[in-house]
Image (tube, rainbow, N blue to C red):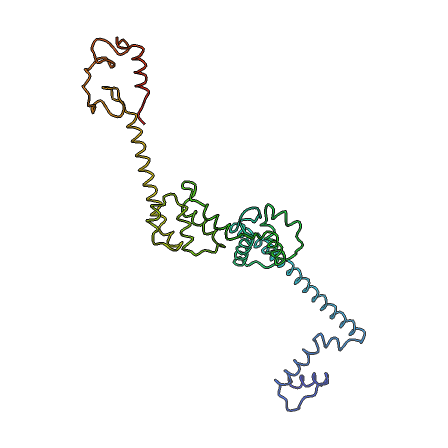
Length: 333
C-alpha cells in the first residue's frame, strides 16, 4: 500500500522512476522533489512572468540594500579608527617635541653656540625619536628663539632641508684659529663658581674647531688652573683629557686642603697679633708668658705701684696719656 501510494504521487508530479525502485528509494525521491518544489526558486518558477520579474527585482534590491548597509558600517568603523589614530598621532607628536625640547637647548643665534653644531645635535635627537622630515621642519621652527625666531619671518623654505640650508647661510660664523686659541688662553677656572669638571668641558667645547692636539689642549687646561705648581705635579704625565678627568678628584681635594690650611694660618696670625699682655701692656703674648718683671697683684696698671688705680696714677701726664694712647692703639703688623 505504501509503495503504491508513493508511486502514485510521483506519477502525479510527472516524475519518472524505475519500476524496481524500493520503498526507501521512492520515499527519498519524493522528499527531494517536494523539497525542491517548496523552495523560493520553485515558487518563482510556478508564478506568472510578471510575478517572477517582481520577485527577482525585489531580491536584487534587498541584496543592494544589504551591501550598502555593510559598506556604511565599514565607513563608520574606518572613521572611528582614523579619529583614534589621529588622536594617538597627536599625542605622539606632542610627546616627541617634549623629548626634543628637553634634550636640546633652543637656538637663538645670539651667543657662541654654532648653528652647525646645533643642527647636528637636533638631527641626532630627532633620529632617535623617529621624526619624519615634515616633523623636523615644524619642530625646528618651534626650537628657534631670539634672533633666530625673528629670522623665521623671512624664510621661504617649506621643508626641513631648505630651512636647514637657510639657517646655515644666515648664522654660520667663520671663527679663525687665532681667535679660538685666544679664548683657550684667556679662559680660567673660577673656583667656587664652577666645578673643575665643568671647566674642562667648556675648554673642550671651545677647542672643537681648534687646530691643536689633545695633549696641547691639556696644557691649556692646566694653564687655566689657580694652583699651577700643584697642577704641574699632579698632571705631570697626563696627555689626554680623559686622563686629566680621572685626576680631578685628587686635585680638588688637595686644593681644598691647602685653602683650609691658609685660612687657619691667617686666623692664627690675626689672633696672635690681637693678643695683649696685661703685665707689660705689649701685644703678641699673654701675661703668663711675659718675660718682664711681674706686676704686683692689685697694683696700678700704669706705674706698677700699689694704692691707686691707673686712672688716678700721678704719672698720667699729657705726654703719658698720648704715649699710652699710642701704645694701646698701635698694633704690630
